[in-house]
Amino acid sequence: MRRLPVVAKRNAILWLSQGISPGRLALTLALGFAIGCIPVVGIPTALCAVVALALRLNFSAIQVANYAAMPLQLLLIVPFTRLGQWLVSAETSRILDAHVLPRLPSFSVAARMSSLAGQALLAWLLVAFPAVILMTLALTMMLRRIPAVTAVEAGD
Image (cartoon, rainbow, N blue to C red):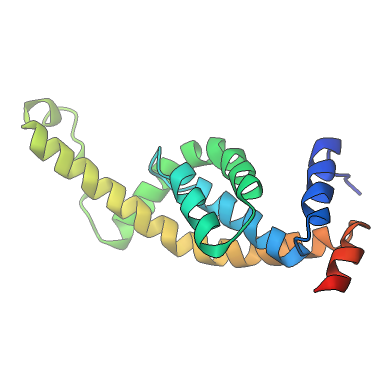
């Protein structure tokens, strides 16, 4: 059986001792991780802050999960873009043609990039909802195995 790193275990115990139930902490971490994988660089940190404030979630926990997802965010930009193009049946070969792109006006380049970002966001939305549900369920079961959680769950 694999053990949690000491730092992660200590942080989880600290968050749980602040009165956060395992389900709420699991939801916070799952949302932070899923939002951290948004295929548009620069959006996740601000969006995590807004979600944490709107849903009254632990700000630190959601940002930790967001930052943990950053390497995955960069790796998933191309797959999300391709999935989005497939979903909307976009012509993939002509959107960013290396021979045509330098000759286009900057407005046209921005429009093409916006189209790609929108397609990638659509793909992310379709993947993120089931991923948040699955991560929340898995993390809730894992967090309930931490002895410090028993006291928090009794107070729910």
